[in-house]
Length: 255
Image 1 (spheres, rainbow, N blue to C red):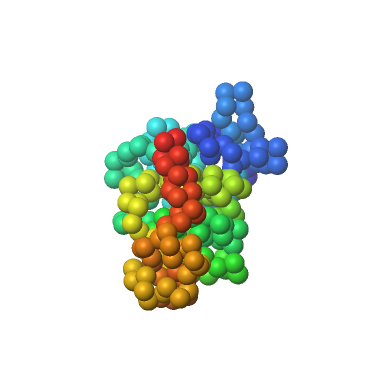
Image 2: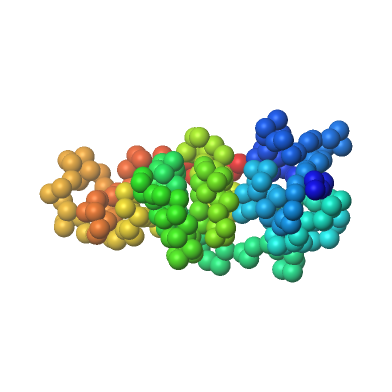
């Protein structure tokens, strides 16, 4: 038997939905969706069946009553579905997901290599490989308590995924802006922390004399402070690229 419920999605959650391709979803003049389904279904299953990954949902109200993802939908239910809204504080008893417990650390899918380098540059522990399989990403995210960042909504819909964000933009700088805003990363960066952009290892201070033979003449002349990656043997200093990315971050935080 075909059953019917109603949805209203708020803010960017509507961007996940392509109504013209949904045979079981119809947008009404009142700006809510009528959704048809069969059998015994949870609200999580219904939300994801129309393209919205569960980690992007922060609050579900059924006729003004908060419910969780395990709620079994009933014919005639009317759901209001809310995304993560910055500075939107919810009582603990109605939160769908606990807050991330520490300084955010991430794992990125194969499409986000440049974003991975930016996050490492600003000191965020960021796992990335260009040959990751989806299952590997989920396994590592679960075992190491990492936040998944992905351009693949199917990956974010996997049952074991907890903390995650869909990345909307193609431009890596805009991607960085998205992540900084969603997870309020500015509070964690104080200008001193950085990781190797190639391998994610923590950088350590190194005396200039230990590496002086490896430096170009102008680098020897104009720079005194250096950092070193013990894993991949790369040397870093505060050159033009450092200043450029610092300026980028300043502009990002002013928006």
